[in-house]
Length: 336
Image (cartoon, rainbow, N blue to C red; front, side, top):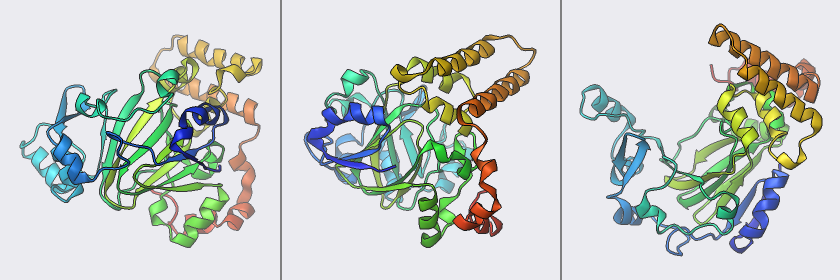
């Protein structure tokens, strides 16, 4: 995976090609609000501190309360204590928050510089606000909804590591999360690992916008306190079925990649999809029976599409050559 770099005025003409090719890209110098490339946390607080941020369909919190966590106003422990003591009705994340119930609050949405051409692709994208303190990290994961993602950095800096779906067996995933714990690795070990799976590492600053192709493994590390806005868009009928009805695994992830471009699905691949639809519609005595039957079919379709499991073919020697085996034995690579 190689991340291409564009200027902001190339966004409209470049995005459709990127979506077809599945290639990541960074667009630079893209205005955020009112034509500004970036905005400080304090300026954002002055403009939008009074705005309620929805975190659930039933409740939300004022933006000021979230921003306090970026400046040390409230810790995870104190938030949990307040919840236990009944001083607040709902948990809200102190380290990293996601703001979304389909759209941004109107006060922010009205002043957001829209991305030219995005509405022509998807007139109703899902927006999320991500914010966190310096040093916050996410799990290495792929997104379960199989949507395309545009991550617009507003303030602060963050590092994004991206790995193509085909390397999933190296990552030993459980569901849509890898058990790989990148935070445990030394820089030299991390560099070697990234080379083994052809990882792409991108540092984002204010005014940068990153395009992440659907189903890409990604890991985010906050290099400083800051926040960004995510635009999630373009979910097609087939990928919607796969994401909403089936248990997300590395095998399904790689199967789903074949269906992202609905104009290039082979007859054989469409027959596989119909098999999944028919089995999903079939009545079962219990949910467990249905789960295991669907997973067995997913394994079978994966082997028909990709042949023998790549992980089983890797062997101990290759694990030793890449350094994986040593890290696994030392307890440095995988979370338990």
